[in-house]
Image (cartoon, one colour):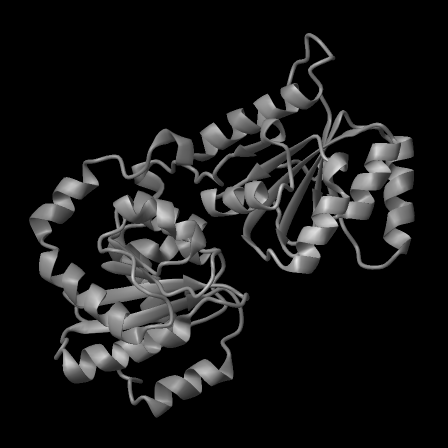
Length: 342
């Protein structure tokens, strides 16, 4: 079976380059897509969308070529009225819709954006990296210290987060939480580290300076694949004000780092896995209280016990994601028998 992966903002891992159609801006790209489908006709087109992306016209082109379309909606999805209207207009063009969180699935059902037999919940699974390939705490910390140009004592506690170039990461509230913890909770022997895959926003650095937490709160920017350095943290905090941090949370959980998260859409169903009850978003006070709760209840013994227990159920693994998606491919072209998927 030939599957053409249609992408713009999100690139799935482990996909051969020849099986990817990369969207380009402009109306001329519609013509290019039409010609590609004329020259090489795939069995399935898998459209992978994030944010406000709908790809409706591309789905129509595929429909006119009688090619089945599967789409995956990766959080965060912006369910604005305009987005919902466009999705309703293109509803019949999609053979199947895959949601990567229950939060998005509920919206799909609420606004009738896909029939119940034509939508599925398949989590964006994480790779089960062998323990030997996960960075050791000291190695991950050495990388961070090298980027900072500062070295701390071995017994320092690191509270960290990972942010990307999108809205709603809520990191400003984590900076305020660092201030509150330092000033009012007498939190000692602790630093806060923000790993960023892009360039740091000057406003964040100015906030750190204005809050006078330069000595305990640090931003490490331009970090490629920042999730791999999560083992450096003793506690991971997701201060988001909108959905979209689920994959990073799952990675931290798999690496057995205690997690604190805000009460945003796609985090609701993972409250049993986090170290403290989900906290209200946009609240440095509640982030601070959750942090103190985890510190008070975390001990070396509990950390050792946690490391021996599988952190995530199978449905949250990349292997399960691949198998479930392949089943969807079979479903949308079920009239074709004896198909072998490579």
